Image 1: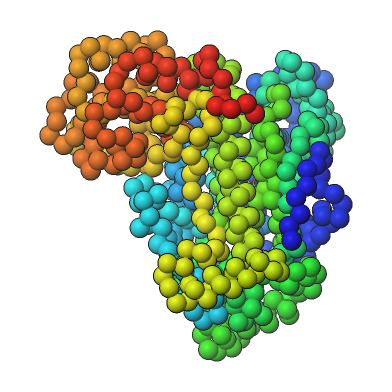
Image 2: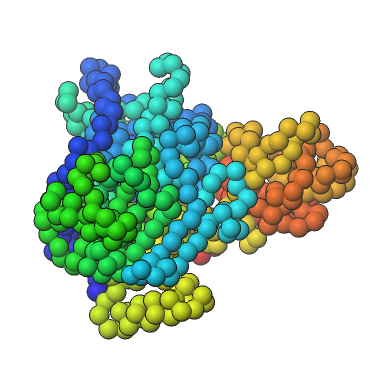
Length: 595
Ligand SMILES: Cc1cc2nc3c(=O)[nH]c(=O)nc-3n(C[C@H](O)[C@H](O)[C@H](O)COP(=O)(O)OP(=O)(O)OC[C@H]3O[C@@H](n4cnc5c(N)ncnc54)[C@H](O)[C@@H]3O)c2cc1C
């Protein structure tokens, strides 16, 4: 039974000690990871204590996404990582599924094409109980994913995404780089006052100190900042245990996500089977509760499991020469969410802010969205285009997202590892019904895949706002096909006002004044064959822009640089002016309720 605890620091020893994810029991040749050089910082020579506008602690997927996004908005930052590579040392195979929203963010950051070229696109998932298919989905058929130019999911090993982000940060000439990445820099202590934070760093060349106006903690689930800031955490940990086998086959299985709830070839426990980049299959086996990491990850035990699975599926035993074990790693999971994602000058993002079970691929994907949410707000505030109060909306928006993701993944975890009694009875009944009746298939829960979050509690979004748009297509006036991300990139971190349908001369004049005063960008959106009054206009031939903004007919939609709708309305009047002010943190509180 999962246990709920509140803690000011790390998990109590009894919980934290169980089944470490330090991957010391990893097997296999592993993945060759790039190593980046340690460069002695000038402060060590000069003794100067430099103050930075932004210090990012942690160069995992969250910290690197944030760094790339800030650089794109023209913001300088220093990124500190205790390691000198991507991935986590020894734990090279972790995240694999990247959701459409993250892929759209990566497109904006310039690495999507590399991910698409190396990764594996998929949209079909099938779930089996024993030999019976009890649930299936095709994400392409679901409205939430159907309009975007990016696919619902791409599978690719997490370290590739991180490596592409690093290369993107290194792509300008050294003197033009906005982010100063400092490898082998471990933050060992921290304090803050009203004006700045002070970080103490350990490096191979000795310790030194730097200051920062904003610190973004992206240091992962063992974040030391939680204790340094006195952050409280709501957490749960159960006894569910898993073991990953990353395998390359001579005769590969189908490119679909297959999950088994009661796999006959795994003693009636769950199994996941997924293709990643380089022809490597990720197979996750659920282990008995309290299984010992060193036993379940032994090579002979892993081989026996693989043979049992493929004998059962393909009817023949695998020979050792039919497949290659690339990497094996046992893991346990816990779920945690900080009660506040901001403590003074420190913002918590990614696993430092929230940890969840991997079912539904919500961990890394939500770290990427945390980073994207914070980046445009920091840029707007630092460049004087928004009020500092806007930064308060980061907690309201991303805490709502994190608690939702934790709730959804916890439900899956309880379906996969039900407690004895009512939970197990429910699962048995759900599986029995799903075998017979289509309506019951929705009850089968092997993971609800990551979708963008809807912000309902943020004062920076109007009542009609908060939803994420998809990267839909339209046509530029000259006839060239365009996509929403191009419009967002054109705004360079400003708000984008889409005015649908006719715009009267008076409304046009008001929009022109608003663009100048509030620094927003306005574009008229007309239907095919309709005449545009504004110079800057696009043609919504298929109505996808309207659909993704959730507006109909004559209306406006105010979009933020992160692709979320801040507000929608009908007339170009005071309501639009208020929506712009709220979206920029001016005057209004940044949460609809107190934190
Ligand atoms: C088995 C498994 C499967 C998963 N599958 C998926 C999936 O398919 N999709 C998905 O989206 N997510 C998945 N996840 C979750 C995902 O891996 C994590 O959510 C993600 O790695 C979090 O990224 P992060 O950058 O926030 O933290 P981390 O990846 O933990 O990065 C933290 C960084 O901080 C650095 N650091 C730590 N302490 C310090 C310090 N004191 N000073 C300086 N640097 C420091 C570390 O070196 C590291 O580089 C999975 C997780 C597991 C375990």
